[in-house]
Length: 246
Ligand code: BV8
Image 1: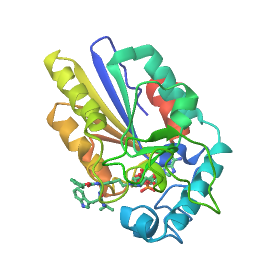
Image 2: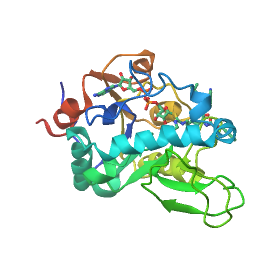
Image 3: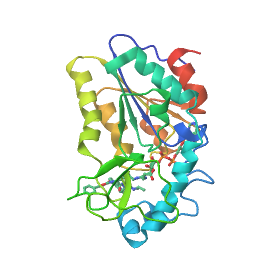
């Protein structure tokens, strides 16, 4: 396993998926016993599913909140927080994960492209501004928006919903900056099946911007062919070696 030797001319983007939290005890989506098993995606992770049965959706996300609150960051999360400390603003973490394990590990420069499990927003969010941190578990009631009284929902990007442009722009402008400053760009994806767009297409953009791209994943799916290098294994074991040689 070669170690990535970053220097003062390196700019590094790491993009994480559910596999980055797996060793902490957070189930992934598409592995055996994953979150989508037993749940139809459109029922629990779409605006239509929420309109249809908000309590079913809150049961799904309350179960995930309860699970994540019992989990701790793993060595992969800690390695990413350390890498950010070393690289500063030449580092960006883009995560599809809605858990708070990166933040609890100390990561600050985080673009949460699919939202945040521990925040609520109003279901009428196109007209109502309500958003708030919330660790509540709602197994027998649907929380209401304190501003307008409509149902509150998790502040999560569901299927068929647009990602927040201000968040995805953090990725695009970080890549553009590398080109402007003639720096060497690295794009390292960790623990993702590459099944969900538009984030699965970020590697193509990074490659066109001259990035050296790496995939760290337990299994070598189709997605691995989009990267220059593939590192098979667990994020918690590979990341410390890949970044620090330890
Ligand atoms: C949108 C909710 C448009 C959050 C999620 C083509 C182009 C563009 C869009 C589409 C398209 N085709 C279809 C679409 C629509 C859709 C989509 O991509 N569908 C897929 C299924 C085909 N995309 C959307 O709807 C997106 N929005 O496109 O909007 C638009 C434009 C204008 C106006 C309106 C709309 C919204 C996508 C966001 C969906 N939200 N979930 C939540 O509940 O958490 S997606 C869900 O999948 C999660 O967010 C998750 O992060 C994401 C990706 O999954 P992974 O993280 O990769 O997890 P997975 O289980 O799949 O894989 C884990 C991997 O880790 C495995 O490979 C495993 O081997 C590995 N692993 C396991 N353990 C370890 C490990 N690796 C390392 N170490 C370990 N220890």
